Image (cartoon, rainbow, N blue to C red; front, side):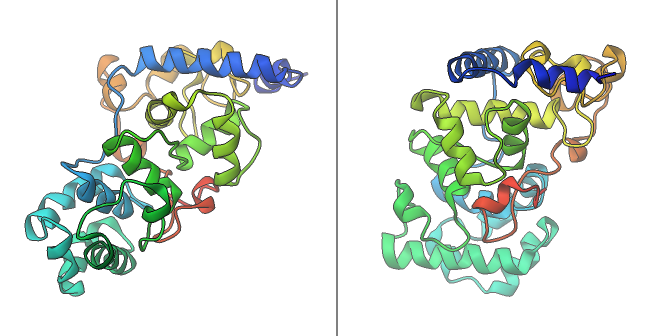
Length: 276
């Protein structure tokens, strides 16, 4: 006898490309209604701060990064200041984010590159951004989409996991996932789609135990049944503001697990679960 998850997946295996596109866009509309305030959850005031924060977010939570960046940007408010910083001092500030030596090397190095190559300013194009230490397509797209209004997809582990669960792709390679998903959505939607899918991955569609019984897109999901089906039990798995709405305390640390890449490698590895 087939399980619920097996039945769900079989429903979509013969789906046409047009059917997949229509289903994908319907999922996005529902996610837009579910997460009307979705945004980048790394605190920042400008492109420099978001760039550094995104590099620091490798294999840790946004909450932990947000805990160290106030002190970091107070000590080093711009690229010039960070470029001349003693690496040991930077390491001490960012230590709670993990991999602090590699991350300190990356952010000091990218600050030095910004000063020497771009007059201390963060470039607003993908070609230049990905030449900076510790910056790959994922980090570049975060900055471009949220600061420069250049649409881009953020393929972190949350997004990659959900793209596969939704059968938007079957790939584990971030670049291929990006191309597959780009074909399903108009370019103007890419940045907000990224926010909403990532929010859904953090709040409902968790890596180890998705809250299927409380999911607003369950009827459209080929992976429905992989997680908790009982509605009451599923509501107990909700995180962040969804947990508050249902009277659950939630666990912000668990909610933000599993979504980034190793320091200096935010390209294809981000889609293979090698992250926070």
